[in-house]
Amino acid sequence: MNMIDFNQLDEQSLRGIDVHELLPQQEPFVMVGCLTHVDEVRTISETLIRPDNLFVEDGRFSASGLVENIAQTCAARIGFVNKYVNSKGVQLGFIGAVKNLEILSLPSVGKTIVTTVDVIQEIFGMTLASATVTCDGVELVRTQIKIAVKEES
Image 1: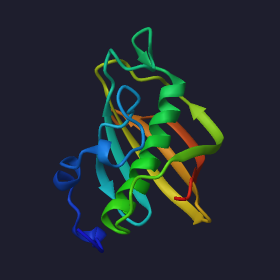
Image 2 (image 1 turned 180 degrees about the vertical axis):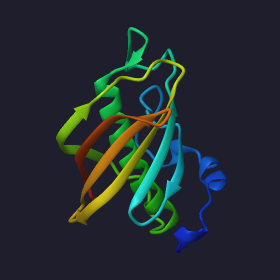
Image 3 (image 1 turned 180 degrees about the horizontal axis):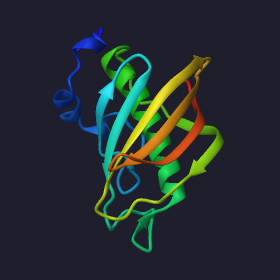
Image 4 (image 1 turned 135 degrees about the vertical axis):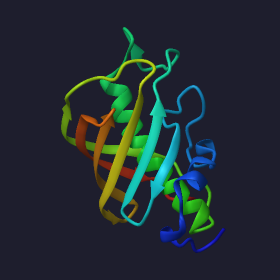
């Protein structure tokens, strides 16, 4: 699959992609369940909050887990573009900054969160994006995040 037409991607096809192939993280540190939408600007992931998740505290997914979920949704987008558009491998990425983080609520175990990341700018291996996390249609988190990608050596 090379030179993807983003208009031809459907949710069922995206759900069929093993997110582990797109991320440098491996279990038990994978915080994204699947991709449901990818285009030039927007990426959406879904994640079921499991009781054995490393970031679950007192039956809720922690603020740290929510930030990691946002970062990994960004990483899954980068991994998707690398694999299916640029025919490259998975690259390591690092959170460069988190700005204007507002955590309105923490989701409970058993709930599915939907994370939407909109790219604002990409330049020199840096991605600036705005992100929201919702659960059952209610906004839980909003923030801006910068991700730096380590160039292949």
